[in-house]
Length: 255
Length: 340
Ligand SMILES: Nc1ncnc2c1ncn2[C@@H]1O[C@H](COP(=O)(O)OP(=O)(O)O)[C@@H](O)[C@H]1O
Ligand SMILES: [Mg+2]
Image (tube, rainbow over all chains, first blue to last red):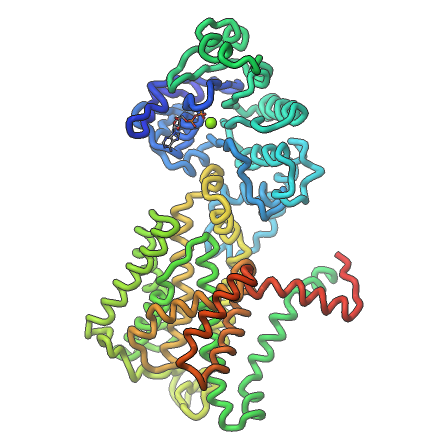
């Protein structure tokens, strides 16, 4: 039984076939990359796995449990948590508050206890763990900054911190280095490696930036026009004729 | 320990001062206005119910859902209270909670379809469902009294004369007991609303307003939370409704119509919704304007229209944005430097 198993997953938008019978097997502990040109259907694939879209057909199984068609918040509670291609955060709150809120949403306490109960102890533990996550991701200096005041790179890092705050087993990152300069990219790459190596979180990431993907991923899946084109180690992908033709050759800014 | 105590005092002295002033209002009013004081006390009583209503509406808007049927929810509370008290002689300490539970149930039914919509569809949908409820009140003679509504709602009573715990709310000449009852319930509701606002539920609701997609991704069921806030806001609106039913002694469907709803929106917009204090300031200032314009009441829609538009244009954050400015101004005036 593999960790995440996607079988013949399709997503149609009216006549548009954004995902066409894509298969994907992700092993526990790996960093898997999904690459493909813009509009290939990568984000759609993420949206279907994480429950934001209902699949047209096909299934998604996580640790043996069928999660396709489940509500996105439910899938997140099961340990499959995704980030967004944009910098998604709560701008009016500080970095620490953002992460604490992400943890709150996990705690399923009742309205009555929220009003009358003394949340101090649970709250202290929450804040402690949140600070730990922020520190771990190297955002320690910004812990009291307002999220809206962060640089783009830091905002994307905060997005990852919030996803991590929910204690996921599978972290899905949608273009984590999009719009970053090379320094910020290096930080993010180091961060993702650390999350897998030290915390054992399995990572599935969509990326446009070739160098990042080649550096980071154990295995890579290539999607083009909504279909799986190839799969393999970074070296195999680099030398795959179909991939070179469809993707690498078309754009000389990559590799 | 000492430090946290002084923090506590620092945070709560404005609220405590206001409550103390309200507690002595009957005596103060009597001293200033003599027998006219009772009339002013009625206004203050209505004001308290309106504050609870506005504060519950502010809670509703934290997810970004501006409904048009909040007055209907208050009406649900008022009608249930009135029916139970008038036809079945149920005492107030039962009518108020039972009315709240009924209103929560109705809120849930209204919220179910509404939670599938956002933005404009939600806005119009809430109007349609609210008017549907009002239509039922208007058409059903029993138990709602049709378009003439219900009158002669008995005043609340606690025990019978002779019991040591007997409290008489019924006197029309001296309404201070009713006033104190209102004050206690209002403070109770406002404290709960404050606790909710700062609880993790409050944070979750604000987060939904900020970015509902992000909330879904970190495990919040946005639909469920939006239904929940509707029910919670309905609960507190119902408390306000119960208070008004007892204060007025008569209600009819027009008490809970669109005009009232528009005034509620004006209170909240003029005061601001970002902080807890916004609606309080909004209701206070607008009630004042309402009283001052009593001599030219045919111009009131115009006056409030102008107020609403100028507030949107010149102070989109509401009057509450003045709080930090004024406190800073006074601190500078006194010459104390804020340490933290
Ligand atoms: N909600 C939607 N409705 C209609 N079409 C969509 C929607 N989301 C994505 N698409 C279309 O699906 C295709 C794949 O988009 P996307 O998954 O965002 O690509 P990628 O992330 O690989 O750049 C595009 O043609 C896009 O226009
Ligand atoms: Mg994309």
